[in-house]
Length: 490
Image 1: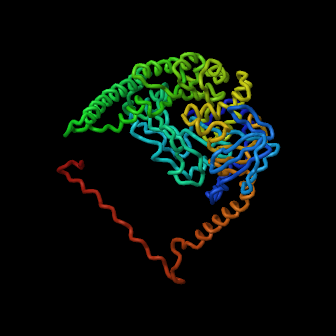
Image 2: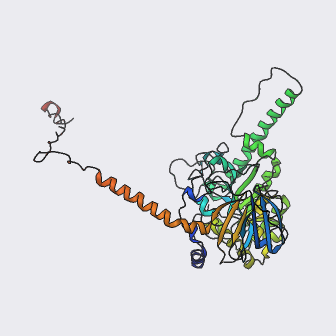
Image 3: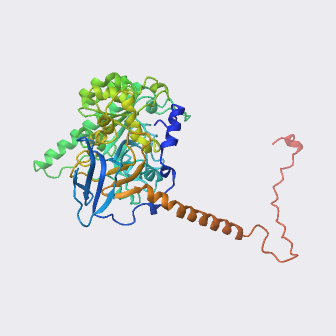
């Protein structure tokens, strides 16, 4: 993870100037919709950026039962429809963040072992994390929540929808294939950590490679034993003893079977090629290289493997292995045939991923449609959920964002964010609710203050003139007397 280091002062200023005030507000649960939204909604008179079939001027989107029922220049509203007039505004697909750590509250790294495939991010989802609401205010509707990068093979990952106000069980994206986090380079070899004691293997890039190879050698053998058992069982053999389950290897077998995606943290070209070789050796695919800051150097090899690349827009030089990153990375990989997305890796950065995507138009000359896809359709394809989200097409989930300006403009501010046809963020409602929230906050602080004032201090409650009883001092044992026989020594 890159933390919160800013690469240039102008970037800091830009974020502060254009970010909507709502993303800095701590929103209570009441900000989430209290009841189901109208099953029929019509967004009309908007400039619609479909991300799949161009731009529709003064278009409309009809939403029924959480799905896009119709989109086009002339869509009629049913009598019972809730109408959102978006005249002068822009609608785009919900932003999809392919690399996020929100909603887990520090449960990111199980760094005690090199292969932590037994742990699962889904077990620690926290629906009360306010970053969910803040990212909604930045137009994010879907996030790929990953384990950290302390391990060559990390924990199991999960794709979520940012359904603020819903319990943890309602966050996972239904039907999305799970993933697993790999990590290469400095982080897993732990040269940038100082923990004392005996270093945990591996401590070199060679060790990282062999840790991954060793784990998949075990997984391949484990799979073969289970395949043989299942074959003999299917043939009708009786009284067979099943092999012993290994929870560490089960997710890796799913990788070998194509049932779990590999998302690998990486930076340098040599380690990218290394993982491609290991994946080919064991017959699995790398779904995405994450960060992949030297991806432009080996873009042809990444494209040939079928892997995707989820990168930063312009972050570099924040550590040694990021020195050769360039802001043209996303565009260069796109031109070489790699499926590219731009991610956040940071809750605050996720609030302006639309602007991060727009930078590729300046650095690399991507078109508006190509830039828009970096945070919509492309990450949807990388996560295998593009049949449901990522573009504005009939039949897809109504995950939409309404902006007051072109989303790829620095002046664009989110007005509404919808997920499954429900409004989960409304800027005007947020602003209108702030005085009530501030009043509630002051009332709670006053109550706390009065409670503290009523609490009796030490010595209070005694009768007038009554002296406070003296506390008995504990007598410490005296040291033993020295004797001539011991010469005064003990």
